[in-house]
Length: 79
Image 1 (cartoon, rainbow, N blue to C red):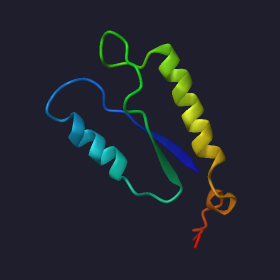
Image 2 (tube, rainbow, N blue to C red; image 1 turned 45 degrees about the vertical axis):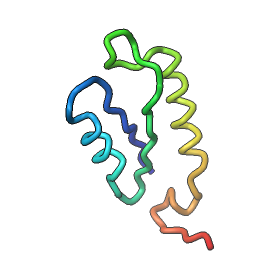
Image 3 (tube, one colour; image 1 turned 180 degrees about the horizontal axis):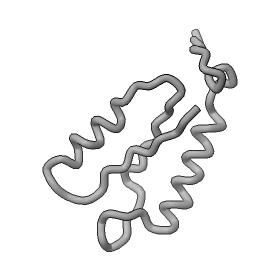
Image 4 (cartoon, one colour; image 1 turned 60 degrees about the vertical axis):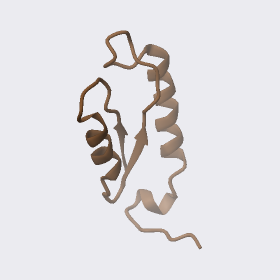
C-alpha cells in the first residue's frame, strides 16, 4: 500500500483546485492523508516541525488502520 499526502499550501486561485485533485485521486492501494490545517512556517508554504511530527502520526495511523487484505491488493467489503 502507498500513502500520499494532500497538501496544497500557499495562496492563489488554484489552491483549492489542487486540493480537490489530490483528494479525488482514486487508485487501488493508495490512501490519501489530508494535511490541511496543519501549522505552516512563516513562509506559508512549508509545514512547521510540530506539524511534520503530527503528519507522521497521521501517516502511521492511516497505515495501521488498513485492512490486512488491502495490503495485498484485495478489495475488502465490510457490510
